[in-house]
Length: 123
Image 1 (cartoon, one colour):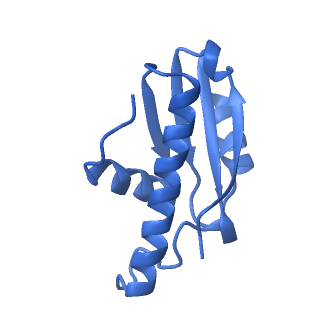
Image 2: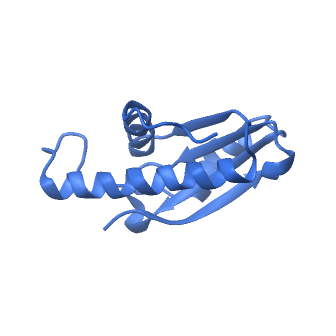
């Protein structure tokens, strides 16, 4: 079942950063691909980036055009819970800093889904 396998940390150390960013990769991609395609192209020396890696290279097996089955809902719920945990962990290392949640493709969908859940953002 999908979820976060590990997290690649890039940029400023959280305790020295001015902004935190969790950047979520898309289906079939990796944090390293997001680093090469996006992060390296940014001028963001004061940003602490956390790039979670999905088990099986996807956050949920369903494609955008697939019906939302019970299995897809379960995978989505696990990935959302893992993303919330990653946010809490990064926040705990740099309380009070602004946090940007970003993503590409399926990672963007997961990020928006998290934002729309109405879950309180940790301080």
